[in-house]
Length: 121
Image (cartoon, rainbow, N blue to C red; front, top):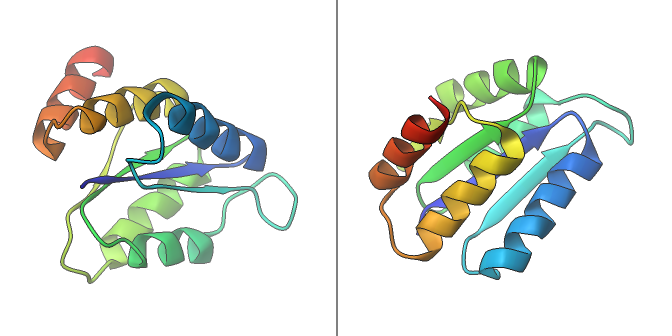
């Protein structure tokens, strides 16, 4: 089943978004979250690349601002695995929540992307 990757400058935002979504859909949707760098605000290409390289199915990537987008783009570009990895331009909390709920009821990755584009595009 399609996974979700969350990239934020803040550990609290990344972990909080993951917790919110898990509370709604349980742990049926695999969510990986990365926020901050060494306890500070920021993003790390290496940490994001590690998350992307560890996926075991297709993945949707949500990010917050600035270098989170740049590093997510680079990690996706450098990914050499066999799964589909899509960066989603949507608010990190609402987009992640919307995607997870839709995935949990059996929608495909393309259906979820279409809905996100309609709602946030």
